[in-house]
Image (cartoon, rainbow, N blue to C red):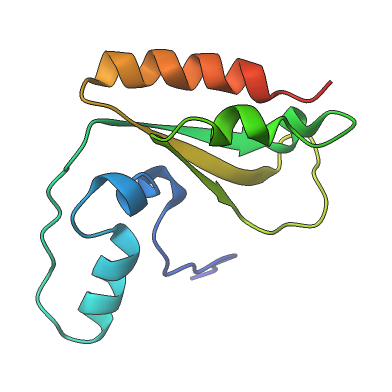
Length: 116
């Protein structure tokens, strides 16, 4: 058997659980490793998660003020020093009472934050 990576961690496709579920995927992993029962994974809000790749940075910082002005959008940056095309730099979660409204706000916000 040859393996090039073993990564026993939550997958980034579930990062929306940080803001939209009673128990996040990160807490669930800790609970399992500690032999605890699983937490309640109920979705408490419709959510849309948008990945932020280095392409969004352009030649400067994205327009974070346009994202942070929205109270139902939660920004998560991963602290990487250098933005490069295709490199995942973070994500944001859009919470809403309705998934289609969340998608619309996510699309508008993504376009608004792109750096010049």
